[in-house]
Image (cartoon, rainbow, N blue to C red):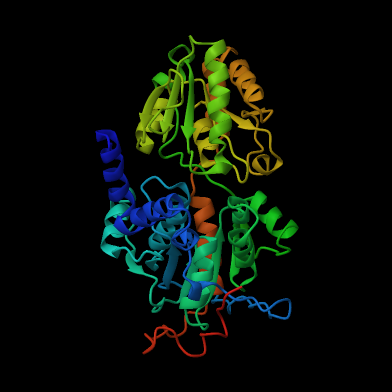
Length: 437
Protein backbone atom coordinates (compact mmCIF):
# COMPACT_ATOMS: atom_id res chain seq x y z
CA UNK A 1 0.00 0.00 0.00
CA UNK A 2 1.26 3.47 -0.86
CA UNK A 3 2.23 5.40 2.27
CA UNK A 4 1.84 9.10 2.91
CA UNK A 5 5.64 9.49 2.74
CA UNK A 6 5.65 7.82 -0.69
CA UNK A 7 3.02 10.27 -1.92
CA UNK A 8 4.97 13.23 -0.57
CA UNK A 9 8.14 11.98 -2.25
CA UNK A 10 6.32 11.62 -5.58
CA UNK A 11 4.94 15.16 -5.25
CA UNK A 12 8.47 16.51 -4.68
CA UNK A 13 9.77 14.65 -7.73
CA UNK A 14 6.98 16.01 -9.89
CA UNK A 15 7.66 19.54 -8.70
CA UNK A 16 11.43 19.28 -9.19
CA UNK A 17 11.62 17.27 -12.41
CA UNK A 18 8.31 17.76 -14.18
CA UNK A 19 5.77 15.18 -15.17
CA UNK A 20 7.58 14.04 -18.32
CA UNK A 21 10.85 13.18 -16.61
CA UNK A 22 9.18 11.58 -13.58
CA UNK A 23 6.89 9.46 -15.76
CA UNK A 24 9.88 8.34 -17.81
CA UNK A 25 11.65 7.28 -14.60
CA UNK A 26 8.57 5.39 -13.39
CA UNK A 27 8.14 3.87 -16.83
CA UNK A 28 11.64 2.47 -16.66
CA UNK A 29 10.91 0.81 -13.30
CA UNK A 30 7.58 -0.58 -14.49
CA UNK A 31 9.24 -1.94 -17.62
CA UNK A 32 11.75 -3.86 -15.53
CA UNK A 33 8.93 -5.16 -13.31
CA UNK A 34 7.04 -6.63 -16.24
CA UNK A 35 10.14 -8.59 -17.33
CA UNK A 36 11.23 -6.49 -20.26
CA UNK A 37 7.90 -6.52 -22.11
CA UNK A 38 8.60 -2.82 -22.68
CA UNK A 39 11.90 -1.49 -24.01
CA UNK A 40 13.05 -0.02 -20.69
CA UNK A 41 16.44 1.00 -22.09
CA UNK A 42 14.71 3.22 -24.64
CA UNK A 43 12.70 4.90 -21.87
CA UNK A 44 15.86 5.74 -19.93
CA UNK A 45 18.11 6.66 -22.86
CA UNK A 46 19.02 10.37 -22.71
CA UNK A 47 19.00 11.08 -26.47
CA UNK A 48 16.57 10.65 -29.33
CA UNK A 49 18.05 8.54 -32.12
CA UNK A 50 18.24 11.52 -34.48
CA UNK A 51 20.35 13.44 -31.95
CA UNK A 52 23.24 10.99 -31.84
CA UNK A 53 26.20 12.69 -33.44
CA UNK A 54 28.05 10.83 -36.15
CA UNK A 55 31.83 10.70 -36.25
CA UNK A 56 33.02 9.14 -39.53
CA UNK A 57 36.44 8.41 -38.07
CA UNK A 58 39.95 9.87 -38.10
CA UNK A 59 39.44 11.43 -41.54
CA UNK A 60 36.97 13.93 -40.09
CA UNK A 61 38.62 17.37 -40.29
CA UNK A 62 38.92 19.19 -37.00
CA UNK A 63 36.71 22.25 -36.83
CA UNK A 64 39.04 25.28 -36.62
CA UNK A 65 38.60 27.94 -33.99
CA UNK A 66 36.30 30.73 -35.17
CA UNK A 67 37.88 33.88 -36.53
CA UNK A 68 39.11 36.12 -33.68
CA UNK A 69 37.41 39.36 -32.78
CA UNK A 70 39.29 42.66 -32.73
CA UNK A 71 41.64 43.23 -29.82
CA UNK A 72 38.96 44.87 -27.66
CA UNK A 73 37.04 41.57 -27.58
CA UNK A 74 33.82 42.99 -28.98
CA UNK A 75 30.53 43.20 -27.11
CA UNK A 76 26.89 42.40 -27.57
CA UNK A 77 27.00 38.77 -28.74
CA UNK A 78 23.96 36.52 -28.42
CA UNK A 79 25.21 33.33 -26.75
CA UNK A 80 23.24 30.10 -26.58
CA UNK A 81 23.89 27.65 -23.72
CA UNK A 82 22.53 24.11 -24.10
CA UNK A 83 21.79 21.89 -21.10
CA UNK A 84 19.39 19.25 -19.85
CA UNK A 85 16.69 20.52 -17.47
CA UNK A 86 18.06 20.95 -13.94
CA UNK A 87 16.72 20.08 -10.52
CA UNK A 88 17.18 22.78 -7.89
CA UNK A 89 20.64 22.44 -6.33
CA UNK A 90 22.35 20.73 -9.27
CA UNK A 91 26.06 21.49 -8.92
CA UNK A 92 26.87 21.06 -12.61
CA UNK A 93 24.10 23.42 -13.64
CA UNK A 94 25.14 25.93 -10.98
CA UNK A 95 28.68 26.03 -12.39
CA UNK A 96 27.44 26.38 -15.98
CA UNK A 97 25.02 29.13 -14.98
CA UNK A 98 27.89 31.05 -13.37
CA UNK A 99 29.44 31.24 -16.83
CA UNK A 100 26.11 32.46 -18.23
CA UNK A 101 25.79 35.14 -15.57
CA UNK A 102 29.31 36.39 -16.26
CA UNK A 103 28.43 36.70 -19.95
CA UNK A 104 25.33 38.67 -18.98
CA UNK A 105 27.33 40.99 -16.74
CA UNK A 106 29.71 41.63 -19.63
CA UNK A 107 26.85 42.82 -21.82
CA UNK A 108 26.05 39.71 -23.83
CA UNK A 109 22.54 38.44 -24.41
CA UNK A 110 22.09 34.80 -23.34
CA UNK A 111 19.53 32.10 -24.10
CA UNK A 112 19.30 28.71 -22.41
CA UNK A 113 18.26 25.91 -24.75
CA UNK A 114 16.89 22.97 -22.75
CA UNK A 115 17.06 19.49 -24.20
CA UNK A 116 14.37 17.28 -22.68
CA UNK A 117 13.88 13.94 -24.38
CA UNK A 118 10.49 13.65 -22.63
CA UNK A 119 9.50 17.04 -24.10
CA UNK A 120 8.20 18.38 -20.79
CA UNK A 121 6.83 21.94 -20.91
CA UNK A 122 9.56 24.57 -21.03
CA UNK A 123 7.38 26.68 -18.71
CA UNK A 124 7.71 24.05 -16.01
CA UNK A 125 11.51 23.92 -16.33
CA UNK A 126 11.71 27.70 -16.44
CA UNK A 127 9.86 27.91 -13.11
CA UNK A 128 12.44 25.55 -11.60
CA UNK A 129 15.35 27.59 -12.97
CA UNK A 130 13.91 30.93 -11.83
CA UNK A 131 13.34 29.48 -8.35
CA UNK A 132 16.74 27.80 -8.04
CA UNK A 133 18.87 30.45 -9.79
CA UNK A 134 17.06 33.79 -9.36
CA UNK A 135 20.06 35.81 -10.59
CA UNK A 136 19.92 34.26 -14.05
CA UNK A 137 18.36 36.58 -16.64
CA UNK A 138 18.69 34.40 -19.75
CA UNK A 139 15.75 33.66 -21.99
CA UNK A 140 14.77 29.98 -21.77
CA UNK A 141 13.78 27.98 -24.84
CA UNK A 142 13.60 24.38 -25.98
CA UNK A 143 16.46 22.93 -28.03
CA UNK A 144 13.79 21.17 -30.09
CA UNK A 145 13.20 21.37 -32.97
CA UNK A 146 16.28 23.55 -33.62
CA UNK A 147 18.84 25.84 -31.99
CA UNK A 148 18.85 29.12 -33.91
CA UNK A 149 19.21 32.88 -33.62
CA UNK A 150 22.52 32.98 -31.73
CA UNK A 151 26.11 33.95 -32.53
CA UNK A 152 27.67 30.99 -30.69
CA UNK A 153 26.54 27.90 -28.81
CA UNK A 154 27.96 26.30 -25.67
CA UNK A 155 27.13 22.67 -24.80
CA UNK A 156 27.13 21.85 -21.09
CA UNK A 157 27.27 18.03 -21.11
CA UNK A 158 27.99 15.07 -23.37
CA UNK A 159 24.33 14.71 -24.32
CA UNK A 160 24.03 18.32 -25.35
CA UNK A 161 27.27 18.16 -27.35
CA UNK A 162 25.46 15.67 -29.58
CA UNK A 163 22.35 17.85 -29.62
CA UNK A 164 24.34 20.91 -30.69
CA UNK A 165 25.69 18.97 -33.62
CA UNK A 166 22.27 17.69 -34.71
CA UNK A 167 20.08 20.75 -34.10
CA UNK A 168 22.21 23.79 -34.92
CA UNK A 169 23.30 25.08 -38.30
CA UNK A 170 26.94 24.28 -39.07
CA UNK A 171 27.72 27.96 -39.57
CA UNK A 172 27.26 28.72 -35.85
CA UNK A 173 30.48 28.44 -33.78
CA UNK A 174 30.15 25.72 -31.14
CA UNK A 175 31.86 25.28 -27.75
CA UNK A 176 31.81 22.52 -25.17
CA UNK A 177 32.18 23.36 -21.46
CA UNK A 178 33.45 20.10 -19.91
CA UNK A 179 33.18 19.77 -16.13
CA UNK A 180 34.06 16.10 -15.73
CA UNK A 181 35.17 13.16 -17.84
CA UNK A 182 31.62 11.91 -18.36
CA UNK A 183 32.32 8.44 -19.84
CA UNK A 184 33.15 7.52 -16.23
CA UNK A 185 29.50 8.15 -15.29
CA UNK A 186 28.33 4.93 -17.02
CA UNK A 187 29.47 1.29 -17.28
CA UNK A 188 31.33 0.36 -20.45
CA UNK A 189 28.60 0.29 -23.08
CA UNK A 190 26.63 2.59 -25.40
CA UNK A 191 26.42 5.56 -23.00
CA UNK A 192 30.15 5.35 -22.24
CA UNK A 193 30.89 5.29 -25.96
CA UNK A 194 28.57 8.19 -26.80
CA UNK A 195 30.01 10.28 -23.96
CA UNK A 196 33.54 9.62 -25.19
CA UNK A 197 32.48 10.32 -28.77
CA UNK A 198 31.22 13.75 -27.73
CA UNK A 199 34.85 14.91 -27.49
CA UNK A 200 35.39 14.05 -31.16
CA UNK A 201 32.47 15.97 -32.67
CA UNK A 202 34.49 19.04 -33.59
CA UNK A 203 33.28 21.41 -30.84
CA UNK A 204 35.81 23.84 -29.32
CA UNK A 205 36.58 22.35 -25.90
CA UNK A 206 36.86 24.24 -22.60
CA UNK A 207 38.05 21.97 -19.78
CA UNK A 208 37.28 22.80 -16.15
CA UNK A 209 40.35 21.80 -14.20
CA UNK A 210 43.46 19.70 -14.67
CA UNK A 211 41.73 16.36 -14.10
CA UNK A 212 39.41 16.90 -17.09
CA UNK A 213 42.26 18.18 -19.24
CA UNK A 214 44.40 15.17 -18.37
CA UNK A 215 41.62 12.67 -19.08
CA UNK A 216 40.87 14.29 -22.43
CA UNK A 217 44.53 13.90 -23.38
CA UNK A 218 45.10 10.43 -21.94
CA UNK A 219 41.82 8.65 -22.72
CA UNK A 220 40.14 10.57 -25.55
CA UNK A 221 43.42 11.72 -27.17
CA UNK A 222 42.04 15.25 -27.47
CA UNK A 223 43.94 18.41 -26.59
CA UNK A 224 41.54 20.88 -24.92
CA UNK A 225 41.40 24.31 -26.53
CA UNK A 226 41.26 26.03 -23.13
CA UNK A 227 41.80 24.85 -19.54
CA UNK A 228 40.35 26.96 -16.72
CA UNK A 229 40.73 26.46 -12.95
CA UNK A 230 38.07 25.60 -10.42
CA UNK A 231 36.56 28.31 -8.26
CA UNK A 232 34.74 28.32 -4.93
CA UNK A 233 31.58 30.18 -3.97
CA UNK A 234 33.13 32.22 -1.18
CA UNK A 235 30.26 34.71 -1.39
CA UNK A 236 28.14 31.98 0.24
CA UNK A 237 30.61 29.70 2.04
CA UNK A 238 32.86 31.11 4.72
CA UNK A 239 33.44 31.41 8.44
CA UNK A 240 30.68 32.78 10.62
CA UNK A 241 31.45 34.47 13.92
CA UNK A 242 30.49 31.32 15.82
CA UNK A 243 32.32 29.13 13.31
CA UNK A 244 35.64 30.79 14.15
CA UNK A 245 35.40 29.35 17.67
CA UNK A 246 36.74 25.76 17.76
CA UNK A 247 34.72 25.02 20.87
CA UNK A 248 31.48 25.66 18.99
CA UNK A 249 32.19 22.88 16.48
CA UNK A 250 31.37 19.21 16.99
CA UNK A 251 30.76 16.27 14.73
CA UNK A 252 30.82 15.44 11.03
CA UNK A 253 28.63 16.10 8.01
CA UNK A 254 27.87 13.85 5.04
CA UNK A 255 26.56 15.22 1.75
CA UNK A 256 24.60 12.19 0.48
CA UNK A 257 24.13 11.65 -3.27
CA UNK A 258 23.02 8.03 -3.72
CA UNK A 259 22.13 8.56 -7.38
CA UNK A 260 25.71 9.39 -8.42
CA UNK A 261 28.06 6.42 -7.99
CA UNK A 262 31.10 8.65 -8.49
CA UNK A 263 30.24 10.48 -5.23
CA UNK A 264 30.76 7.33 -3.16
CA UNK A 265 27.45 7.18 -1.29
CA UNK A 266 27.72 3.52 -0.29
CA UNK A 267 31.32 3.95 0.87
CA UNK A 268 30.37 7.00 2.93
CA UNK A 269 27.35 5.29 4.50
CA UNK A 270 29.33 2.18 5.47
CA UNK A 271 32.23 4.25 6.80
CA UNK A 272 29.89 6.33 8.94
CA UNK A 273 28.24 3.18 10.28
CA UNK A 274 31.64 1.96 11.51
CA UNK A 275 32.49 5.42 12.82
CA UNK A 276 29.20 5.66 14.73
CA UNK A 277 29.66 2.21 16.28
CA UNK A 278 33.14 3.15 17.52
CA UNK A 279 32.31 6.76 18.52
CA UNK A 280 28.56 7.04 19.24
CA UNK A 281 29.10 10.30 21.14
CA UNK A 282 30.11 12.19 17.96
CA UNK A 283 27.08 13.69 16.15
CA UNK A 284 26.66 12.86 12.45
CA UNK A 285 24.74 15.23 10.17
CA UNK A 286 23.37 14.06 6.82
CA UNK A 287 22.45 16.47 4.04
CA UNK A 288 20.84 15.63 0.72
CA UNK A 289 19.05 12.38 -0.08
CA UNK A 290 19.45 9.69 2.58
CA UNK A 291 16.51 7.63 1.26
CA UNK A 292 13.29 6.66 2.97
CA UNK A 293 15.09 4.41 5.48
CA UNK A 294 17.83 6.85 6.33
CA UNK A 295 21.43 5.74 6.74
CA UNK A 296 20.70 2.81 9.05
CA UNK A 297 22.13 4.42 12.20
CA UNK A 298 21.45 7.42 14.40
CA UNK A 299 22.14 10.52 12.29
CA UNK A 300 20.65 14.02 12.18
CA UNK A 301 19.01 14.25 8.75
CA UNK A 302 18.60 17.77 7.34
CA UNK A 303 17.33 16.90 3.86
CA UNK A 304 18.05 19.46 1.15
CA UNK A 305 19.36 22.79 2.43
CA UNK A 306 19.83 26.11 0.70
CA UNK A 307 23.50 27.06 0.24
CA UNK A 308 23.29 29.69 3.00
CA UNK A 309 21.75 27.21 5.45
CA UNK A 310 24.33 24.62 4.45
CA UNK A 311 27.09 27.10 5.28
CA UNK A 312 25.56 27.63 8.73
CA UNK A 313 25.58 23.86 9.30
CA UNK A 314 29.18 23.58 8.10
CA UNK A 315 30.18 26.18 10.70
CA UNK A 316 29.00 23.84 13.49
CA UNK A 317 31.03 20.73 12.53
CA UNK A 318 34.67 19.69 12.44
CA UNK A 319 34.87 17.36 9.45
CA UNK A 320 32.89 16.42 6.37
CA UNK A 321 32.85 13.61 3.84
CA UNK A 322 33.53 14.90 0.31
CA UNK A 323 34.02 11.66 -1.60
CA UNK A 324 34.61 11.65 -5.34
CA UNK A 325 35.88 9.04 -7.77
CA UNK A 326 36.19 11.36 -10.78
CA UNK A 327 36.62 15.12 -10.68
CA UNK A 328 36.75 16.69 -7.24
CA UNK A 329 33.35 17.58 -5.78
CA UNK A 330 32.60 21.28 -5.31
CA UNK A 331 31.58 20.32 -1.77
CA UNK A 332 35.22 19.79 -0.74
CA UNK A 333 36.36 23.36 -1.26
CA UNK A 334 33.09 24.81 0.05
CA UNK A 335 33.74 22.89 3.27
CA UNK A 336 37.26 24.31 3.43
CA UNK A 337 35.90 27.83 3.05
CA UNK A 338 33.61 27.22 6.03
CA UNK A 339 36.44 25.87 8.18
CA UNK A 340 35.52 22.19 7.79
CA UNK A 341 38.21 19.58 7.12
CA UNK A 342 37.06 17.57 4.08
CA UNK A 343 37.83 13.87 4.25
CA UNK A 344 38.26 12.56 0.71
CA UNK A 345 39.00 9.14 -0.74
CA UNK A 346 42.59 8.95 -1.96
CA UNK A 347 42.47 9.57 -5.72
CA UNK A 348 44.92 11.08 -8.19
CA UNK A 349 41.96 12.44 -10.14
CA UNK A 350 40.48 14.25 -7.14
CA UNK A 351 43.91 15.53 -6.05
CA UNK A 352 44.54 17.13 -9.45
CA UNK A 353 42.28 20.09 -8.65
CA UNK A 354 42.62 20.26 -4.87
CA UNK A 355 46.40 20.60 -4.33
CA UNK A 356 46.30 22.85 -1.25
CA UNK A 357 46.97 21.52 2.26
CA UNK A 358 43.97 21.03 4.53
CA UNK A 359 42.00 18.06 3.14
CA UNK A 360 42.54 14.63 4.67
CA UNK A 361 43.02 11.87 2.07
CA UNK A 362 41.68 8.51 3.22
CA UNK A 363 42.20 4.93 2.10
CA UNK A 364 38.98 4.32 0.08
CA UNK A 365 37.54 1.55 2.24
CA UNK A 366 34.88 1.88 4.98
CA UNK A 367 37.45 1.35 7.73
CA UNK A 368 39.99 3.65 6.07
CA UNK A 369 37.48 6.50 5.81
CA UNK A 370 36.15 5.91 9.35
CA UNK A 371 39.72 6.03 10.74
CA UNK A 372 40.44 9.27 8.83
CA UNK A 373 37.27 10.86 10.22
CA UNK A 374 38.23 9.98 13.79
CA UNK A 375 41.80 11.26 13.34
CA UNK A 376 40.31 14.53 12.07
CA UNK A 377 37.68 15.17 14.75
CA UNK A 378 40.01 14.09 17.58
CA UNK A 379 42.70 16.60 16.58
CA UNK A 380 42.44 19.92 18.47
CA UNK A 381 42.27 22.97 16.20
CA UNK A 382 42.65 26.64 17.03
CA UNK A 383 40.84 29.63 15.61
CA UNK A 384 43.96 30.38 13.57
CA UNK A 385 43.80 26.86 12.11
CA UNK A 386 40.18 27.43 11.06
CA UNK A 387 41.05 30.73 9.42
CA UNK A 388 43.94 29.11 7.53
CA UNK A 389 41.58 26.42 6.28
CA UNK A 390 39.08 29.01 5.14
CA UNK A 391 41.67 31.14 3.37
CA UNK A 392 43.03 28.10 1.49
CA UNK A 393 39.84 27.93 -0.58
CA UNK A 394 39.91 29.64 -3.96
CA UNK A 395 38.12 32.96 -3.80
CA UNK A 396 35.03 33.07 -6.00
CA UNK A 397 34.19 31.86 -9.50
CA UNK A 398 34.62 35.18 -11.30
CA UNK A 399 38.22 34.59 -12.52
CA UNK A 400 37.17 31.28 -14.08
CA UNK A 401 33.97 32.62 -15.61
CA UNK A 402 35.77 35.68 -16.92
CA UNK A 403 38.32 33.51 -18.74
CA UNK A 404 35.59 31.34 -20.28
CA UNK A 405 33.58 34.30 -21.55
CA UNK A 406 36.70 36.14 -22.73
CA UNK A 407 37.80 33.08 -24.70
CA UNK A 408 34.41 32.76 -26.39
CA UNK A 409 34.04 36.42 -27.23
CA UNK A 410 37.57 36.67 -28.58
CA UNK A 411 37.20 33.67 -30.86
CA UNK A 412 33.73 34.30 -32.29
CA UNK A 413 33.21 36.33 -35.43
CA UNK A 414 29.76 37.84 -34.72
CA UNK A 415 28.70 38.17 -38.37
CA UNK A 416 24.99 38.01 -39.17
CA UNK A 417 22.72 36.08 -36.81
CA UNK A 418 21.68 32.71 -38.24
CA UNK A 419 18.11 33.05 -39.52
CA UNK A 420 15.26 30.73 -38.52
CA UNK A 421 15.23 27.94 -41.11
CA UNK A 422 12.01 26.97 -42.81
CA UNK A 423 12.78 23.31 -41.99
CA UNK A 424 14.18 22.86 -38.44
CA UNK A 425 16.28 19.97 -39.77
CA UNK A 426 17.88 21.31 -42.98
CA UNK A 427 18.58 18.69 -45.62
CA UNK A 428 22.34 19.22 -45.50
CA UNK A 429 22.31 18.41 -41.78
CA UNK A 430 20.35 15.16 -42.00
CA UNK A 431 22.55 12.09 -42.51
CA UNK A 432 25.69 14.15 -43.08
CA UNK A 433 25.96 15.19 -39.43
CA UNK A 434 23.93 12.66 -37.48
CA UNK A 435 23.33 8.94 -37.44
CA UNK A 436 23.22 5.88 -35.23
CA UNK A 437 26.30 4.02 -34.13
